[in-house]
Length: 269
Ligand code: CP
Image 1 (tube, rainbow, N blue to C red):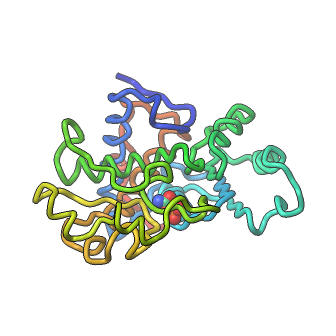
Image 2: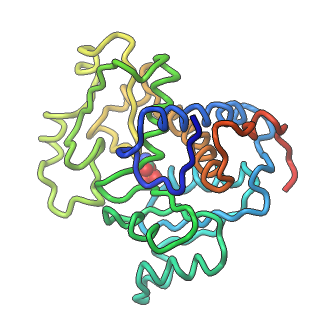
């Protein structure tokens, strides 16, 4: 079956075969991460706009790295250093970025639905890089890829989501003006520690999207322990984001030859 994606705004509406397709497309890019030279020319001449209206380490750098490893250029907007501070609106900001002719916009915003709103006004693909308490599709895909790699499948697994799920899988202090729980209560109710992990399947794996609040939602012994896949998730994130950018910008389908299979990595710009 052929899949085309105009944007990647959410995983919730995607069918199982579309999700499998995205994971399968990420696999050859995972292999590229193991090469001494990691750069392809697949998107040479293309430009990815990274518009982060909220702080980010992993997602912003991972999308930037993914674009670079595909040979694309990036333009970077960081809200704190932008004219948003002078009162420019979100839509005016993205219209101005778009006027510089990027081929794709990757956007993080604290407001749920903001990337959907922007996508309705732009004629280039928009990727949701996290919209508040709503969706973070590339995170969901890299989580699924990590689980599939480690356990061989994502079907029929018991997945325990541990935490205050109203505020996601980690304590999102940036969204909590008035935290519903004290740190002490959170630790008591939800902290993933050695004792709690012992109640899980012996070969259960531990994922965390980051950033980790060490000693609050997870103890260092678990975060750094043998069942932890935290840094593997980060590595897989680059491959997943390479696949997303490749599919959205090139408009490739399942029937096209995968660029990681047809091209040898090279060091040139
Ligand atoms: N997991 C995640 O989105 O991390 P960042 O906020 O650092 O991008």
